[in-house]
Amino acid sequence: MKVINIRPDANGMINWPTLSAQRKAIVTIGVFDGMHLGHRKVIERTVDLARKNNAFSVVIMFDPRPSVVHENPDLFDDFGDNAQIPVDSQALTSVRQRLRVLQQLDVDHVIIVRYSLAFAAKSYRFFLGQLVGKLGMRALVLGSDAALGARRAGNVHAIKELAQATGVFDLVVVDDFGPGDVRVPDPIVPEVPSEDGEPKDPADGMNKAEYRAWSKGMPNKKVRAWSSTNVRWMLANGRVRDARDVLGQPHRVEGIVVHGAERGREIGFPTVNLGERIDGYVPVDGVYAGWIVDLDADEASADNLHSSNIPSVGVLRKDELHLGVHSPWRWAAAISIGTKPTFAESNEGSSVKNVVSGDSGDIFESDSISDFGADSSTYPNDSENRVVEAYALTDKWQDLYGHRICIEFAQFLRPQHAFDSVETLKDAVRHDVEKVREITDAENR
Image (cartoon, rainbow, N blue to C red; front, top):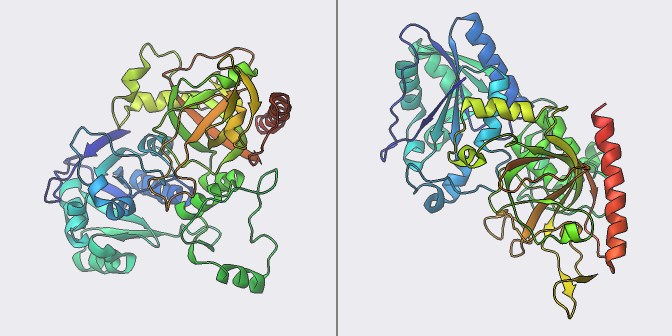
């Protein structure tokens, strides 16, 4: 797979590469955030058609997400060529995570377009004309609700008419709706489950009348069951197992391990703590079962892997090896998401005497914070410092400081609790660890 990174100029024009003078291209276009089952159906069809027609399969992917650029033009549309794209806390997946899936699906070329307002102002007719003339596009593969170009005027109906009128490319529409439509709150506001165990879909067991009444009781919108929006809502309620069913793999967040306050080590449960820049949508606060994966294991210099937004194909192959179910760099883990813990200090200094916070962060050491939530509308506890940390169920302590790690979510265990003593806290953590072991052992059988 060849990855090409392109940034439009100030006028929104792109210098498209010439892929081949002889072979044509079968192209699909989108953000593909989450790389869920609907996305995979579209991409698989693109690859299949390319093979049957001796053509290249080409995925054109936008980064950042168009919606976040339009909502925050000053933040996302004004940074230099070598600048790191600002964190999009609502994105399900990073470019690196999406590229892994594209490589697994045997895509030939991925063109990552740095989305900008100037680029967005181009008409779909102009855009598709460029793809035909520059890339040699012979067919365009889209999901049934796709829309391209200025004001999203290029829906599948309009593009079909253009294809028929010009005769220079075919439009292939893939039904990627999956189980159908669902209604989700609008806006999506994270809500911590009130009980232990994986939360259920609130609509489970409802008949049509009950579902209609439930949905009318809140501002909502209709989306596909296989959609990034639906997955985002699931994660905002702790439903990581339901999200996995739509994503086709466990939901993951990634980041660089930083030093914490080492409180977890003091109580016998040392953890890894993610730094401020976290890739992937951080689920709602709580304690989860899952895994830690060291993506930088056996690297002489882990820093070299973090210098670019676009990883090399070699890095992607290494990621795939490390993420394997039976990888030696993958450990079952108890995962904590919450705000900073608060401990009472003894007169002598830093000795932990009593736990006075009700945050899930109490479970593990940490004084690092995540960058979740760009504004107060994103998360109700935006003003508080959210922490993502995990305790690996391994007898051998892993020195992961400075490494890029992946945290995979398997199941929600419980919401945050207040603890009146360190011993009570330890008992709760021991119980969490046993639940994690039970869940992860069952999944790895």
